[in-house]
Length: 499
Ligand code: HEM
Image (cartoon, rainbow, N blue to C red; front, side):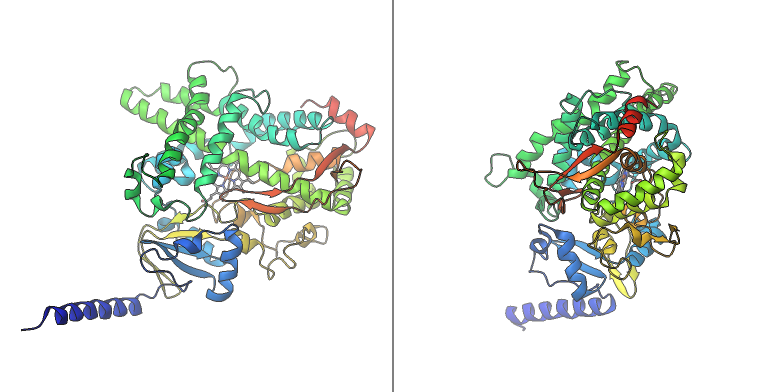
């Protein structure tokens, strides 16, 4: 008879042989060695994860494997690999990680955070119906009106405060037909609070409940159940952000045209009550996705623009020469001028690249076992594209830390041989409907204002060079810039141009 010890040794050896053979046949991509059970959970928790992951790619290559408890993760550091997986294999790479945290805080409604399924299909259908290339020009009048109002506000301001107002005002108008008075408006305060919730929860590896869903059942009173308390406190704020403006439209409290109004008009035609309720829920999620997706991203991009300009008066000078010859002193720029303003376009492209707004992209999830370059990628793996690394790769963008729009210009035109940062910064493959929204703000500011470094109480200029901070959406700081109108003629043009 074999002893119990011998049986255990035989069983463990058998499992080890099976695991070894399986791993030999299905080799995972390389990556930092993890700890037993928790895997790489602690490795994920970094202050500037995009930089740590970028350094890892020097050791492990452009496709890195990690494990957070039982959840497999792959960090992709090359644009080619990201396109191969997320774009060319989109049939199995378009889902999003299932997140207990998002469901608990109420953020699970957002299309960018929704795994494949019926909800994803419906919210995506509605969102894209209102944002595809053919309909986005319909929003240009409202966008232009808000940009012009913003320019007028900037005449008496440092620009920082009114920049933060511009985006919520435009988005609330387009999505809900609601007029935002200022940053103290209740609607805006709620959005900001709700966005802080999602930023807090998207610090990689911070909340273990995403990797150990049973933790959600820990009662609030148990010491260490901080997340459960945080989620309970946050949920009403997120729900208010989602429902309050939508309900205002539904109850006829708004008068202007809006995406929500148009959605509701279509839903009214649905004879089946159950289907109508369902469609209304998807419409809420779609409108919520729109403005939560637009506000922080565009704000961050514009702050990058202001910092870059305050650092480089020579670049502003060149942009102005282009604007003076194409637009002239009699009017402000419009969207139609875009193709004739390659240098302004290059500035916009460099802003997208330099302080990458979403440095680690929006994570995807693979819905089926897959192989790439001989490496095994198990179903359920979270795919994190390190967009910051791709946009700071010195082979594609020499001296990547320098703000240098000239890298995109050849013979006075955009050089098609240099990769357009938009193909990475907005996700891989699908055309992003917001690709051009910030362009007109940038062109208008350059046409009418000088962006200069701020000054301290002794009149000395502060260093405007920023650093990137944040988690899902990141922001440059400090913000040491101010706006001064270029000339009396420019100031008059701003004051007198309404639309
Ligand atoms: C600088 C500005 C912006 C950047 C860098 C940005 C970036 C991104 C990225 C990386 C994704 C995920 C793409 C993917 O992985 O599939 C995304 C999704 C999305 N963004 Fe933006 N975005 C910006 C502005 C906006 C604006 C202004 C809007 C609203 C009009 C918007 C609405 C959305 C929506 C609805 C999605 C989800 C699309 C889907 O999953 O099908 N974004 N954005």
